[in-house]
Image (cartoon, rainbow, N blue to C red; front, side, top):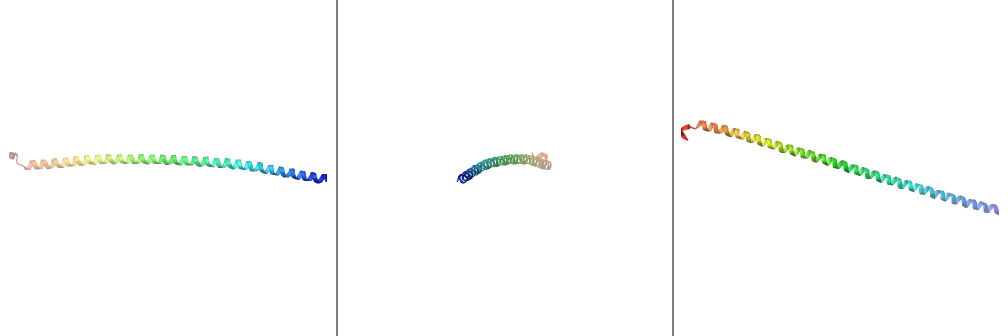
Length: 108
């Protein structure tokens, strides 16, 4: 009878020990999973921030290129206008010279 009781007590103690061991293992696994999830979320946040930073930089570069293009376009338009006006003045003055030469001087 005593041996049966001792065997039952040992069996209960062993089950209790196994249950506690399982709970500790599950608790550690849970901690590890939480830490991993936190690390993954932090990494995703860093990736998103880096991606946003790259997009801002790219946008700024594009804006600078557009600004340079518009400035160059305005500069070319001013040059073309000045050249056109110069050419028109030249043509206009040649026309006057021809006109004044063809007119007799005593008519004026």
